[in-house]
Image 1 (cartoon, rainbow, N blue to C red):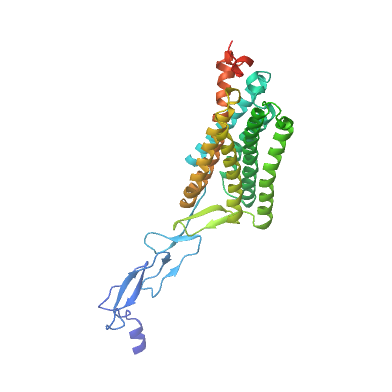
Image 2 (image 1 turned 180 degrees about the vertical axis):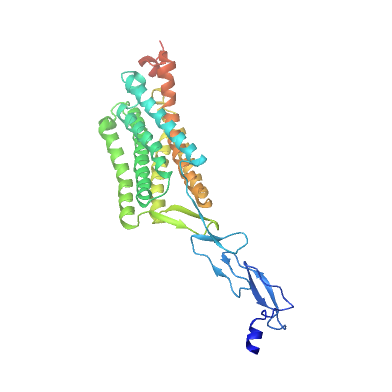
Length: 351
């Protein structure tokens, strides 16, 4: 009878402490009875979902505490998508310059027999324009939800395509220097003038990047990765480069070819006007080298989708530098100054 009477009574509560609401945990007060305690907010990343919890517990990796730290809520997923204003803008810019490059290629093909086009090694110009168009298109591979296959494809594709473009520029520069030197009496360099030398430079230059990419994809290929540490309320889906060493080796090889082209073009910048393409190559390579030098510190200091934006901007800016510095002046002469597109004007012969 007595037990029944006491069982109906409410549980005694402490008079020196209030109950700890969810999101807080109890901490005993030193020198006080056990029924006296303080309420401490759960640490970041932890919750308590009951009243007067003794301990807090962590949320799963794909969840994060709400503001009250009383329950776990799913993290939002972040990546550069086509629906994102940054992603959509970058995609639009890439497509615009792709169409512009193809338009320049059509202009060169239509005026294939004019002196300006003939004097600038037609085959190299066509290969360079096609590779630039593919460079702009390769930027689209960096937009969208990263997958292991796209992570591997985008780095290898851009690396090889851009190396072809830079190798074409290097071949153009070498051709300019050889062509000028071969005009001297008894020059032994006349045998080097022709398409074989320029084709060999393009093939050899591209071969080095192909080897690096093959080793990269076989040994430590890029893969899809989930970054749960950089941002507390978001999961960043990104491409892990696999081998950082090979990633920078691939970039460094392209930079080496660009720097070599710049040095050769800089030495040939004061050649007679017949060979003034070296001036345009000098400016284009200076722009490319500057963009890629700035790329590394900016790339290392950004996180999430902004890292991808930096990569796309670098690709578009460097490709745009080659297109605008080398081909736009020639298009201006072809379309607007046809009076300059003559053999006499090209050779700078005064009547």
